[in-house]
Image (cartoon, rainbow, N blue to C red; front, side, top):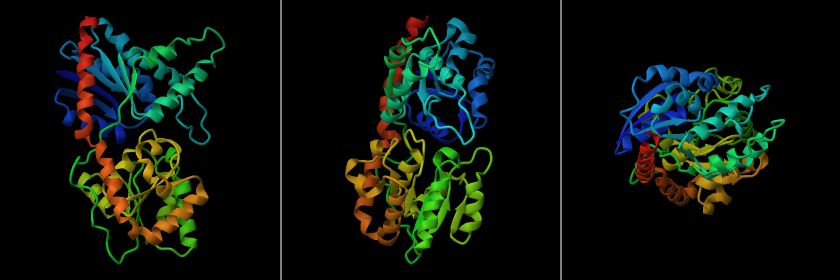
Length: 369
């Protein structure tokens, strides 16, 4: 079968998802993209760009897109010739946290709603994300002063499901590495986006507390930065100058993987995380996780590991980080088992579910004719 994938924000997890789906699916998927910047303008205007960029939809069995495009606008511009459509929600604008000093533009939430209503099938990247969206949706609609369209909750829920994104590592074999350098301080990994919702301030505050206790570490500051470098990272470059072994996004997938394989501990202090590809990748390649006991993390990490690797607040983050820095060799077996557990997220293990959904989507084409 043949599908068209329109990705208005081709970067980070959006890029990984699109490339992984296309390279593993048994179907042909053509990809048309826009660069990963100015996300608000993508939601407002990507549909207008794609409507002129795409010259023919009749050859496709289905359309795939993500939440940063207004599918309702696109379908209205194309009229009756639209194939059935699938929307993958990486994030949503009903629950996404606001940057400091920013006020919420409710129109983006309504774009999510009309996109979901225009879709034939909707997928969320975790149960946590699904639950958050539908918990917030009635409250969001109740902001309207009158004529509240409460019917949309069930209309969207009835065609929504959950399917984890695949991750770009082998389902078998390659996992925990022995590349940690003996005799060197443990390597702490940050491989998240350099943005406010990943909460770098708490991460660096925890590192400061570790140094105050006289403990040693090295630091790899990986992850993408789409526009400007946050002040926390600029300050960190000076403060941890001699400890930093990598500063900035590593374009080479092979080199990025090598940094993860050398890593000892991966930390998240995120305020928003609907799945957590970066954490799953780091664990798969041997990093010990230290994660908040909230967001999507309790869902993706097996419960047997929660007591060791989850923290409740900043105080516990510092205490557990100090303990791991001093005692990480004793977690060798747990590192191996947790790495193996992450193998379930490999594309090879989830692609059949995606292909089955796409095949069911294509069956709807006769109803669209």
